[in-house]
Length: 587
Image (cartoon, rainbow, N blue to C red):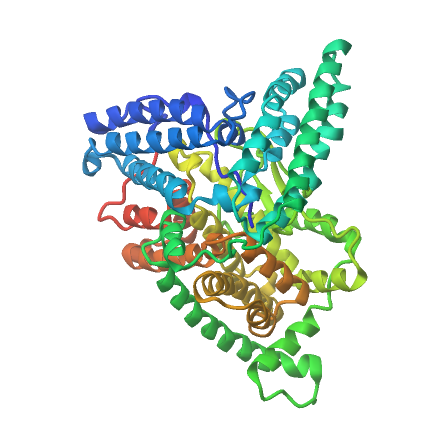
């Protein structure tokens, strides 16, 4: 899962003229009133969501940790309903395009908030939702303020940790087994933030020794509370655990709110099934072409999937050694930068830092690679390419993993995560003066762009247009397609683990380790796996429509930069803007 903090921009842009930083706002009186409303909305929103605020760089409430009790849930519901009532008083048809998008995004988010608390009720069955460690690690590791100030916020925030986890224990009812195990792993994997990292950071300050002792004592109490919560989960008697399968009704609703597609979940699933057949057809043609090069006169398998599988298996033997995985990624990024620039696909910003790092312990257990980008109020901070470690893996497991991320796929992974994928898209999002699009960014747009960018790069000649690279890209594209098929089939159609593994290994040509990891992921998440293919399909469809609209004036770089200029808005809203008779300029 791409654990992306997809949010940028400075708080100072929240003025009545925020949609155009170069001059006065050109819009209706309603536009100016709505801009003021957005500012007031965010001021109130952060009071109820301090951890979210910290994650996007809003540090006013860094020292606050809200106890997850019924009273606080009721405050969230009341807030959302009040905002929906306020939104109902505007006429978005009169707004500038950017405000129309913001209005639709806010309305969706408030409806989602009510649904999540009243219908989904994950607070009862998902123990991993109570993990506070990520926010504390962010405060500790990001250099947005002097270290002593950040450590003070850390210290004050810790005061609520024992009460937080006591309340969490009260709220949990017949939890999902797989989510319980994930919560145990993540809490135990991240407790070092309190046991070790905090103390190490204190040594670098001039905070008086007596105060340091108080801070360390509280850190020990916090670590004890976290480990106590893990022990509580380990010892919890749960004879009738809730299934991790969401069920079709909840799934369709969650898809509607999270993906914000113009299609239903079932329609996207049906499209993915068709896409899988089309990809298999293309892969078979390439495999037939490559067969003599790698197998000489050996007889070609009659079964198409077996033919493709053998060719992929042969190409997958080219991979780095376990200890070289991260360094190989670091070496790839300058090559991608040079290619994008030479082909004039996008304008890149070399001033935005991107660092490759080992995946932090508190993030472990969901995905092997991800991008963490700075929040809208911390736009100048680092972006991190998080890489899972293979340390401690058995030779067989490591070999399986590295065959999956072979020399071809590793390049495509770097396109997806970094250049011109997530990292570049999120830098562009930083330039869009809309806090709403940044804070409530659409995951399908973000993931869809990353998948789209892979094909765009290969279409431009990346990999020297070799059939080997194209075959491996189709295999990688199948991952996005089969993510959707898997997620919908598991949560709505009761697909079994064995059926899922068979599909992933035989029809998506994934290594056993990758298939096992994907099963784990689909058992601890829902709907997010749809975002890759849904966004990709909608962007490709939009590009085709935009080509038709622009005719001889169509230019790929112009399309890419225009698309990215709308920030993290859902693709369906961007499509409405780009295909309008006179597409409005973004400011």
